[in-house]
Length: 401
Ligand code: ATP
Ligand code: MG
Image 1 (cartoon, rainbow, N blue to C red):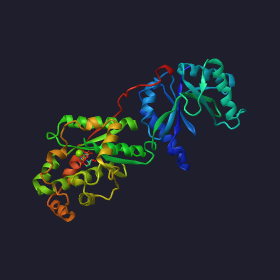
Image 2: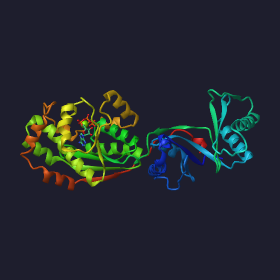
Image 3: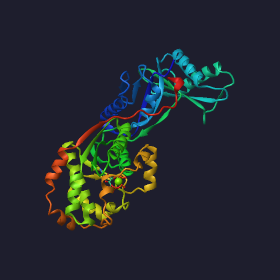
């Protein structure tokens, strides 16, 4: 008998009162999206648990995928049995002997979620523990730090048996906090900001400004690869690529050099806001971190933010670069971000951008130019790409599925 399903425990969502059923539904959608390559999988949600029923699909791959799904506190590959003592005992022993090697210690952890069950938790622990001890010679129990923790969960409809609990990604299920647009560059910060947003349950769509021929196809591919990493956390990712060359050239022709960066950012924000409106999102996320570069001083933000009153979410605003880099490593975006292809801002960056731009000055400089038709043209020529997650690597549980 092998693991035939995965039992999923909810995270913060279990405290969410009336929203609970909505959260559970969002989580199921997110799991379905993440597992789209496994068409035989069935997902069954109940108030306390969600089950992924494998139906012959590759459990090892599925475990890897589930590690990235937000809203999951922890999960266990399980065997489902009836609540007949003999059937449970047989399954417990069979699973145990598969993972047991000489010298390992064990304990039994029973969870009696079915409060009407005729045996108490302690009695159940005793029944299963002695059954294993009778059948496996020279075995010792260790309740504090066992090598094998056999878990039996008795629920109203059935019993679930496992010897493994895997840490989930935490956070809230995708889409349970509404939708925002992520300004995604090829840098280190914005993919991390995207990850943090997804973790708090935001649905995000990416917006990337692209300036061919000044920025290469490889720079674009880098952003697509980053989006693919984010897709592994959300199941899918929609990326809008905005042609920005014409606007950047216009800015360079018309705006004094030390204000080009400020105006460029303002235009990016205006365009992103336009796309946000069209996509029915309610916020914009950036990878800005206070003081990191000229465009991220508080004066710059004051001058740039003026173009919209849409909420701008900056998950990294108070974080140190080293901590951002650590997250980039852990979500596997770092090595993509450091590929050496130029981004549209690096190319046009002036020698000495204003670190303390003045709002009234930038408004004055921009007043000589009618950007509107250019903005409209850029928005009309967006390329939108639907991105799916890549294959993940697999490690554990080979023999148990
Ligand atoms: P990142 O590492 O995210 O590129 P950064 O430290 O390089 O950030 P900036 O280049 O000042 O900082 O960019 C600040 C934020 O502006 C980025 O985090 C991103 O959200 C947005 N941004 C910058 N360039 C682009 C671009 N080409 N397309 C979309 N958004 C961008
Ligand atoms: Mg950048």
